[in-house]
Amino acid sequence: GIEYGGHSVVIDPKGKILASTQQEQGVLESRINLDELTRWRKEFPVLNQMLPECP
Image 1 (cartoon, rainbow, N blue to C red):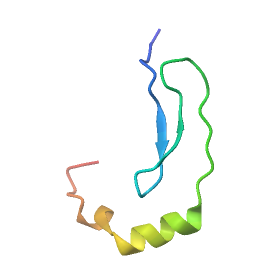
Image 2 (spheres, helix red, strand yellow; image 1 turned 90 degrees about the vertical axis):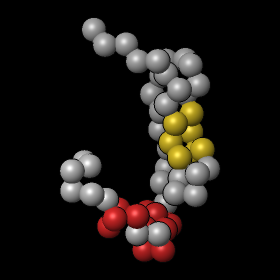
Image 3 (cartoon, rainbow, N blue to C red; image 1 turned 180 degrees about the vertical axis):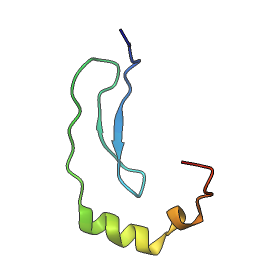
Image 4 (cartoon, rainbow, N blue to C red; image 1 turned 135 degrees about the horizontal axis):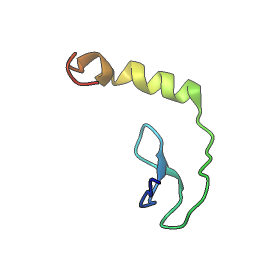
């Protein structure tokens, strides 16, 4: 089977860590403010600059 090293995180568009599993096993859940995400993507449209060969 596949083993993962942990350290999973959910990070908001500004870089703030919303949730973290550290090294323990578990399920990570977090709420995301979609309105804030939409505003952030309009202000910083970095996905529009992604090269086609970079998925």
